[in-house]
Length: 158
Figure 1 (cartoon, rainbow, N blue to C red):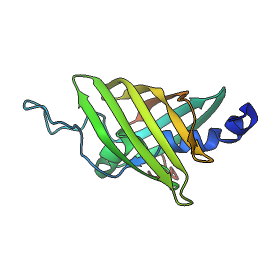
Figure 2: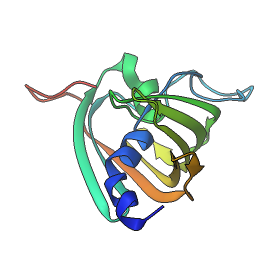
Figure 3: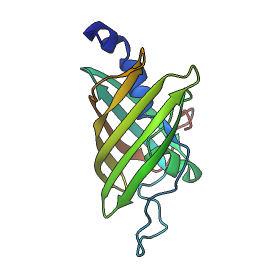
């Protein structure tokens, strides 16, 4: 794949890294002593994705009912993802899965990182299928932090 094609795919890569998991709650396989409490808190969050030298920062209000979808890979309207590997516990997380866009574009995603109730950092990458060939994994990061427990008026909801 040509470098210019990869640069045009940065928005796709960021979308894949931010795509919502369609399966599994907080951990798989579940650890016997794991708490049912969510790994991060609801509220007003800022998150930044970086890939191929491009950064995108967004803020969203996350309701308690949306924490699993938000933390487990974040979300866009463009991708449906499944994460067969989904391990969360003791401040560490690992996700591996695949995403498909509405148009049928396929992306494989790998992320590992650390989390606390008010922040998380994932590093990993995505492999994009184009012309029937999978690209090498393209490095990417997601850094998120909770700005406030309450969302400001007019905030966009997750």
